[in-house]
Length: 478
Image (cartoon, rainbow, N blue to C red; front, side, top):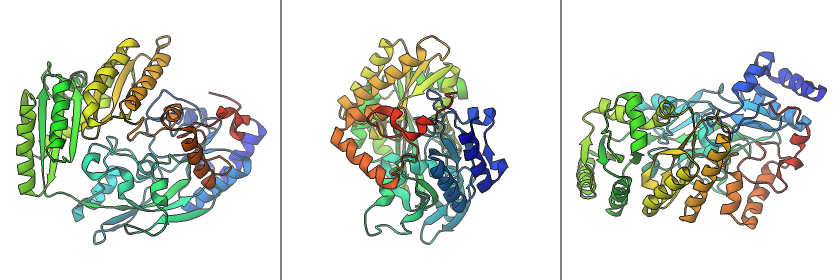
């Protein structure tokens, strides 16, 4: 380790203590990627502040040395956003996990960024409330990470994404100052800086306190499972449900490959010859959900469903959702490695999108499984590959890039909820005009004039990474 790096570590130790500055090889390897292992880079160190004041002091210390910092929660992101390039320091906020307040009358909660998504809903449940955003990783992902990525989940169709449920933020800026954005109510005056911060992927600063809306738990829900012989029939049913004026709480699709993986992982007993499955949920008051469930059943049967079943009780419903939310884990039984892509297309273009994605995978010699939020056209094709095979990593990355191009060509977007991170930053340049990107960079520079907050994530930068102060300090890639 060179003298400048030692000076950085000494300053961090002075702020938080030696036990919360981890720079061993094992600790650095453990934080070299997020949940997508495609992009790996070891940080200089991992520092774990426990309060806003410590976050401020750490950011100020790093600013003095010109060292980048990367906010990280549970590390469940899927776009390389929490990866520390160029000797950056990981700022782990997972230890800041206090629920500071639950106000059932105002239906709000105030939390630290390390609070796990599902933990907040569990704490609010005695009041008949929940935190509505529910990413598939909600049992492990943190609220701070949800804010950084503007996370969604299966119930996005009706409930919206994270930004729709965040009222206020306490933020430590990359300059080491802190400020408050928004407040405790809807419609705070002035510019919507909360909306700007949500989804900024840690490039505008670090949220150290988050005020969120809590949503009443519906009094009734119905969960339906419709099995189809083909993906085309299932996507047709999706379009017809929305066209009928019904907005389900969730409308999820899994193709036959993914169903086979789930069968082997959880013994679900889905038909082995099924081409696709729709998991549909409606919620609200008893009378409404019964009527909507009845109408949806008629629609999916008319669209060609081979069978339609309803979850008989809460336990059966939970089992179905377990299978959906752990689908990507089940894929591990089929392949030693996979890349989960994240793009969006208009619902009406789903059949064409899936056909073209299959063609992309075949052209690169890859198998693909699909599980996604069909209701809002948010696709998650899962590309199988063997990390040990020569050229496999390059092939799967190239296929992922082509899939993003397919989504844009069909009038969609390169990401629905996973963020841009490292994975999609060059694709962003194909989606936006240079003037659009320059406007985004200008906004970012207002918050982070030195370019130290998660640099080179979320936006492509002219000239590449070679122009940064951080890269000048680069002493080892791995």
